[in-house]
Image 1 (cartoon, protein in one colour):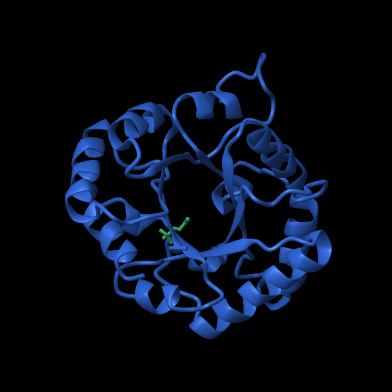
Image 2: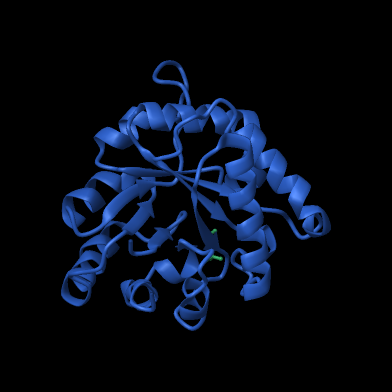
Length: 238
Ligand code: PGA
């Protein structure tokens, strides 16, 4: 199976970027598989309608309640009905800036799976936590996946927080070591095999080396996913 090439636009790009982005992919990457582009919620429908089957569309977040008085929130069903097939849950920016806890993220994961979405579940340690990354990741995994028995629609993204948007990339030795740890932990705790993507300053100049690692099942790309040229260059470095 082709490794996952997942984009996270975060709060960047605009409606006017969607058509040229998709057009470039159509022209340059017709046979690429496992392309996922996660966009701001207001752009999901337009992106999905434009990209159709060429790329899978993802949301960057959703709320765990199905409906009700939650001003400003968007449910997993809303995300799905707008045309998304994926949703990112637990991005470090959601955890750090918006105070999302493992308990909340577990509820979001459950809600997303119930709505029929595939989930990119992010975990990762901060710079201060680096020396104890094992216990940090273990807590995020054990609490985040509590009660989950079916991992077939879950992909983990390991994103060391110190490598996000900083230009600092984990060494390949670090990536291999941590991905092995995550896969073994999920297997031992939940009896499941899970794909693990790497994220953090992935760009065309380093993606080939990262994607060549056996333990890496794909990448989650922030900054370098905003331009179709870079995104496709990364996809073609598989
Ligand atoms: P970055 O972001 O590629 O800009 O480091 C990755 C992410 O936050 O998903």
